[in-house]
Image (tube, rainbow, N blue to C red; front, side, top):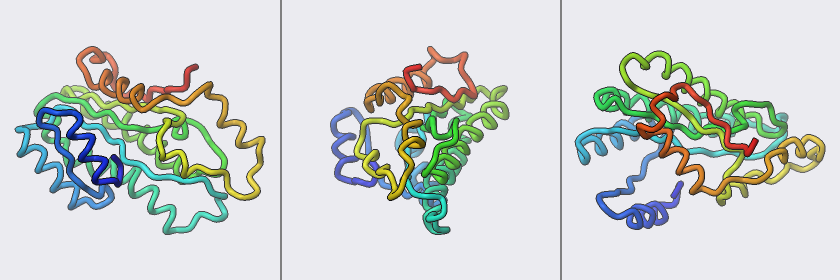
Length: 208
């Protein structure tokens, strides 16, 4: 999955049915419009949107460049905005659901990962704003907030040189990292009719 086209295709094939993998740069609003329109044309509508694209890294705030800041915000936060905005008419027509992947990083301050935290906090805020604005129209908008997921993405979060181990220790309060399947199951449940009472929720996945 992710930026691996072959992996995305393999995942779609493993799902069977009419699952499809389509490449799209979520930071590119025009590309998002085309991809969403293609999905609606192919399937006749849209019931659920999951925003899961993300990038990030550990670095000292003093070393964050304008380009690096924009990369993280453009994928994580702008991407969530672009896709949700493009999908909104179809989702409203279906009285559907949006589930975005935020993070515990969006609920608390963390050292060495400012741009990532800010982008995820933006997703949490976007979730709550849209949940209020569209609740009367039957759209539910929620997000999950894992502390990390056991995927290759974690390799990007190597401590920067000179990192204070006491500050890094704050990140290890979560007993363990969830597996991708656990996060996927939670997303599927939030999008289902079983979770109709949940709207505007930023659900921590931190094992308490």
